[in-house]
Length: 367
Image (cartoon, rainbow, N blue to C red; front, side, top):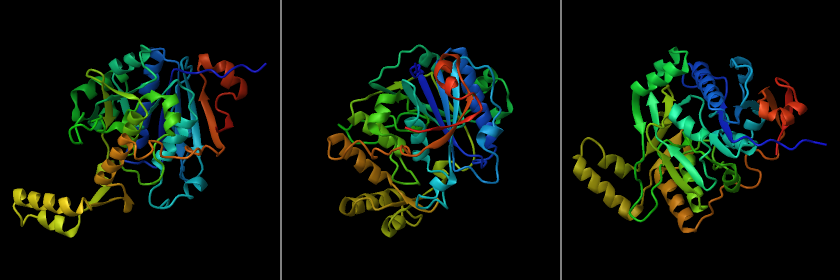
């Protein structure tokens, strides 16, 4: 008789490719992966780490081959899902952006098994207080958890021990992405500042919402959109406070550095150095009163969602004029059979996954 599938408490989803994005990427990823696994083991969290290797470069080794994986894990199963370049090439502008970030994350979310799912980037460290809270199993299915993101000096990767890394992070914060209100009075203000790095929510609601919006390969505000979508679906936002922290290792080529805004000619003129700032601000406000915000935004030269457009979508979602579900039933490449490799199988998981595929051998997985 087949044994039932085991359900971990937590699924952590990461997306990357071996292209040295941002500089020193493999070292940043190595620090993040080893730190996360050490904490999952120490706090005894039944979990799985899902790494999506999207559109891997043909001339480079796969991520599963270059990351130094720990052995003898008791609590965390490690799965690597590979998305072939042929799939990436289906999308418009595939030649300009090597990763379709929202589809890639959704691939991992869709194939996750955890009671709760935490998508994140590959250069994060979690404070022990934050991981201890997750280990307490106080998470509730109807809540979505947020935490301030602290950008830290990139020199942290020169340290090897997690204890030293976390102490360095605590003392070398560059900036804090904390809550800041965006909307007018009466409209729900959510913690949407750098929220893509920590959106902890039950798998049930990730499935209900069908993941992040997948409509653009150059995503802008997808994590904020999912915040308001989950709010409309009845999920309560809970902001975890200090000393619970999320540390993000600083690097080059950050999202905001690549995002370019193109205001209409009149706004550009009113904001120029030839016009006094207070007067220019009044000109811009008057112009937008009549014509609206017509600023165009590009990411790597590809048109993407402006802040004004994003805000309008959020308002429509909250008042029920637009669905809070962005994708169809094929979200997260649901119809694709993607190659998956088991790097390690936790003790709680051996009755299911290991009986099908030994660690380090490939399997085909999809839902």
